[in-house]
Image (cartoon, rainbow over all chains, first blue to last red; front, top):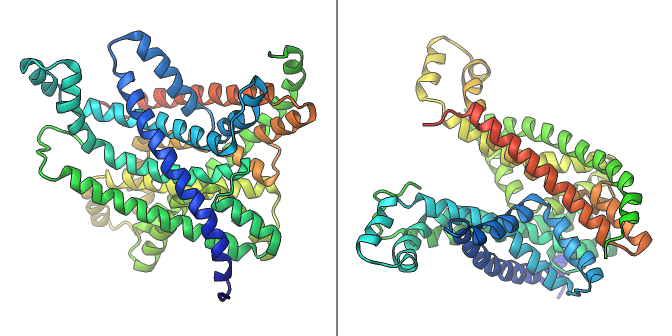
Length: 223
Length: 217
C-alpha cells in the first residue's frame, strides 16, 4: 500500500507509537502504586517509614530522569545487576513519576478536612479503615486533576527511552531520519502523534474526573 | 567496588562539563521567561487570532516531548538554512519548551490581579501595553516567582537531553568518560549526585523566596 507523502512514514511511526503506549501504561501502573505507597508513607506516624520514603522521593525528584535511566541501564550492570532496556525504562519512568505522584497523594490527603479523621475515630474505625473508607475516597477527587497532568508528563518522558535503544516513537523517528533524511516530515508527524495521544489522555482523564466527582458532596474539601 | 582514584581523575572533567550545563540552564531559562511572557500577554490580546495562536502554541509545546522538539530544531533548521551550534539549538529548545510552562504561570498571576486594576488603568487612559507594564505585571509576577523557580529547577534537570544532540554537558561527558574506561558506575553516579545536590539547593532557595514573596494567611 503506497500512501502519499508524508503519510508513507506512518506505518513505522505507528509501530513506535505502540511501544510508547505500552511503556506509558506499564509505567503509569507502577507509578500509581509507588505514588500511593510513598504518599501514605510520607504521612505515616512512624519515622522509620517516613525517612526512607523521603529519600526515595527526594532522589527521584532531585535527579534528572535521563540520568536515572542511564544509571539503571549502564551503571547498575557494573554493580552486578543486569536489567534489559525495556525493564529499566519502565522501572525508571514508573519510579520517577511515582515520586512526583507521591506529592500529589500527600497534598490530597492533607486537603481532606481533619474533621473526617475525628469522625472516623468517633465511629470507632481503625486508622486503616478510616483511610480506606473515609479519607482516600475523598482524596481521590483532589488527586485526579494533577494526576492527569503527571500522566501527560509521563507520556512525554517516555521519549527518553529511545536513548537507551528502546524502539519507541522517538526512536523510530530517528531510524527513519537516518534512512530517508526527511527530517521535517518525520519529526513534524512525530510531534503531531504525541500531541494526539496527549489530547486523548487529557480528555479521558477529564471524563474520569467527572465520573468520580459525581454525587460527591465536596462541602469541606478544598480542591 | 568504587574506584576512588578514578573518581578523583574524572572529577575535573565533570566540573568543566557542569559549566556547560549551567550555561544551558541559565540561558534557556532567560529565553523561557521572555517567550512565556510573550505568550501570556498575547493570550490576553484583543485580537482573536493572536490570542488563539498563542494558546495553540502553548498547548502544543506543552503536550509534546522536549526530546522530539529538540530533534525537530536540530535537524530541520539547517534544512531551512538556519545553522546553529548544538548548544545554541539546545538552549533554544529548552527555552521554547519551558516557555509553555512559564506562560501558564504568568497567566495564573495575571488572572490573580483584581479586575478593578484593569478598570482603573482604563480610567487613567493607559494604553494596553502601558497597562501591562505599569499596572498588571508588577502585581502579577511577584506572587508567581516561586512557581517560576520550580520550573527553573525542572529545566535544569532536562539539560541532560542535550546529550542527544552531541552537546558536551554533564551526562554526555560522563558517558564518554565511561566508554573510555568501561566504568560507567562512577561517572554516572557522580552526575546523579551533582544534580541531586544542585536541585536540593535550588529547591531550598525557592522555598526561602516563597516565604519572602508570597504573603501567607
